[in-house]
Length: 222
Length: 298
Image (cartoon, rainbow over all chains, first blue to last red; front, side, top):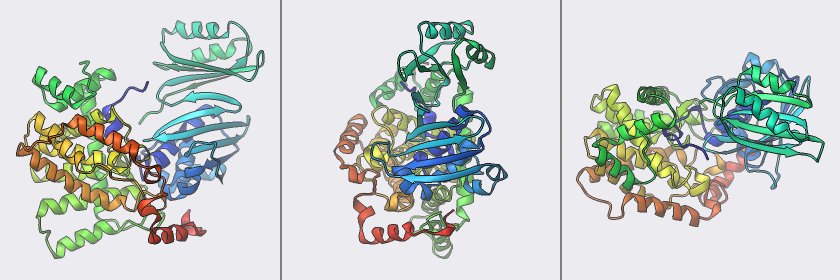
């Protein structure tokens, strides 16, 4: 459960006009950037429902791009992000869609580059967000925790191997979610941590046999 | 300290037990919960305070419109009026109303504001806090005390419901901001803990049922002007509370009523723009105009 804070009430300091449609969009962009963690050639933002309908009036399009380019919710660059040199270095476009099966404020990031990746997320209110899907895998990342995500071959013993590597750093696991596309195929693991593991530890996990992909994602600040 | 602040009764009890002010209890709890020092809590609060002041300063002299072009020049219109003709209720009233508009207009221009508790209600707390701080020449410490007091009120309410128009209508956004502002005004005036909580109860009780029906789904109509109205609303509550006029329904029960009212409120009036003001003839016309492709929109 989320630990409530005084600063949920008297913050964030942010670019207006909407915590869900602007600040939430920036945070979704930041998370997508952290998860992809490479320089992309091209990105398509697909906005759904309320994001699609009222997003332009709220600067949701600008927020998503600004976050993806690494700017925080309080960056004065968000407002004019299309004119920044950072935005001119990337090929981006927007698609808008109605889909009642999706959250009212949902977005997909279709990212092309050295690897292609699709990341989905929702802005769930008051600037809070959740990443719900990476490629075909269901995940649950809120940005409130430092999070390790990995894809690996589904087989016995993987969770214990990974958790013992984390244990070497004496870091507490707050939650752990697993998913797989079918038995013996690719599985995903999403581990929320009370403090961040070092990149060295992440590399150790990456080196475990049959681990395909690891991301060490820092929690969102501000 | 490990305090539990899930109800106003508990907040009052805790203040009395330790003989401390609301802001002291809140800052100690925040420090404990997040493993930081009280002075870190206060310096983070000061950052919010500074952001509020910058937004007011910038907003007071700007007439730049929002992306939609619907709003953005009302604050200057109001300050111009005050230059020509003073407000009937005096200087402090001028400040409260114009600071509220200044902040919300900065918000719709995509400039920097502090959400308090939300972006759509960002003008109310700063309007009351900064106006009174200037009027009474408050020290930075006193201003921080007042803002943490306001935060504590929102904090207690948020244990029962999220602050979102989509959950409970505008009563959960501008209404809560007004309750927070009433509380901070009493703190500034030197009121006691019961009076502070009572002020919040009075403010909240008198906006129960406030819907969220923004035109075209944007944080503009009626949000901008509503911030000025509910900043003034807070002052009524604080004056009554300082006179020891009690809310006959205690603060916790008022919050329960707000939660229930929010649940009973039809979804068309909860940030969906499918009812109320959003579907009036004029609102529909505005929405149609905005939907037309406009090459200047980006």
